[in-house]
Length: 314
Image 1: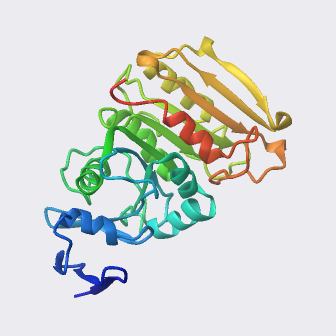
Image 2 (image 1 turned 30 degrees about the vertical axis):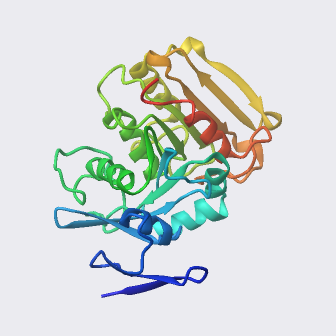
C-alpha cells in the first residue's frame, strides 16, 4: 500500500493519503471537506484513477490556477492516439505544445484519459457504443463516467464539456459528436478522421473544428481504402447537422499555406470549421498535433476559441 505524506509548512498541518485504499488521516482544517483536501493535494500531471464496479481506468488532469470551488469551469477531454499513454500525451501536448498554458489562460480544465490495451495488442480507443455499462469494455460509457467522476471532485460546468483528440483520439471524438451529443457540447480534431457510418442519426447538431494536413501519410487527407477523405467527412457531418454546403466561406492564411473553410447555419446554430494545412506550406505538417501559429494565433487557442462558443444549454 502506497503512502504519500503532504506537509503544509506554514500551518504545520499534515495529511497522509493512502492512495490505493482511498483513506485519509491526519490533522485537517475543520472547514474543509475530504473532497477539498483531495483537490488541495492532488498535483497536476500525476496519474489519477476511476473505479467502477470492480474496474479501474486512469487519467491525467490539469487544473488551471484560477480554479475556485464556487465557480464552475468548462472541461476539455483530450484523447491520445493509437498506442499512446495519458502521461506522455499530457506531457507532450499539455506541456511541450502548450495546451495546459492555454487552459490556464482561458480558465478551463483538461483531462487526458488513458485507453486500454485492445485485441490489436496496443492501447487505442474503440469509437462505438456496444451497450455494455463497463468502463473497460465501452469507451463511450467510460467517458460519461469520467465526466461524472471529475464533477464529483471539481466544480464543472457540465453544459460546456468538449471532446478533442489526436489521430485515433480524433476518431473517438468524432464518435462522441454523435453518440455523446447529449453530454458533449462541441468537438475538436487534430489529424483524426470520422469512421464511416459511426453516426447514422440525422440532425445531431454538434459543432466540429478539424485540423488536417495534406501531408498526412497515416490518415491521408484524400483518404484511402480504409479511411474516408476529409472532404467526405465534412459532407457527411454537414448533412447530419443540417449545415448547407453553400454556406462555405474560404479564407487563405499564412500566405496561402493554410486554408480555412467555414460552414455555418446548421441546426441549433451548429457549424463546421476545417483548417487545411497545405503540403506546399513548408510547415511542420504531416500526422501531428499542430503547434505553429495560423494567422498569428496558436492552434490551441484557435481550438478553444471555437469550442467555447458552444454550450448544451444554448
